[in-house]
Length: 116
Length: 110
Image (cartoon, rainbow over all chains, first blue to last red; front, side, top):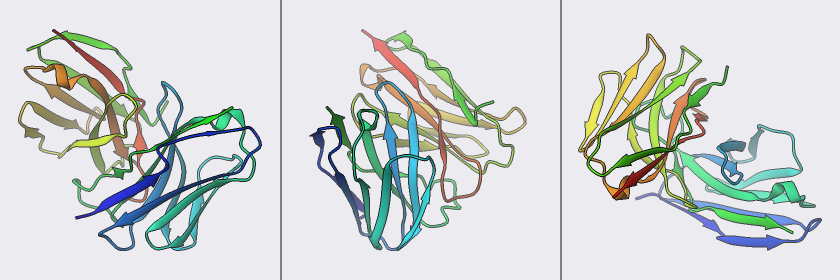
């Protein structure tokens, strides 16, 4: 069965510090991978998605970046965090294509980031 | 108009009640539809897909109305454990990414 791992669960970082969040998927090959952010009391905002190794699409301009160095690894990074980067970061995967109606997204357990 | 719109609620209902949520979408070419459940401070989890013919899973029934461009979720015999935020998800541009609604909060009261 497929599993998705995301870490760390919580993180408190000072403004201006770097960030690296990692997500790995097991039990599937060539998945679509996604990074979402959810601000407190808000909806999910898609940050990046990737359909393959080295292929990254950015949805919103920001000081974050993403990389996919391996098929089942997705990394979210920042060189200098801002206060506004605080939020709940979620990694997700879906099957490539996902044409059939019952193919949804599976989320990792998330990282709660607080920038102080 | 937003791609996906939901009433944020909260919907406060007594145990045993029936409650329904609607979600409207703007892109008539949308292909796939889902309902997710998100508990407080947790990740969203797939509740059910929404099929064109409508589908049921226990106390939950999902419907799709393409003509009016909305999907619905009906919960019968509400349980305290149903308290959560329900997210509507629509695949408007193909199958590489989807759009999430901002969610409808349900609170089931004893």
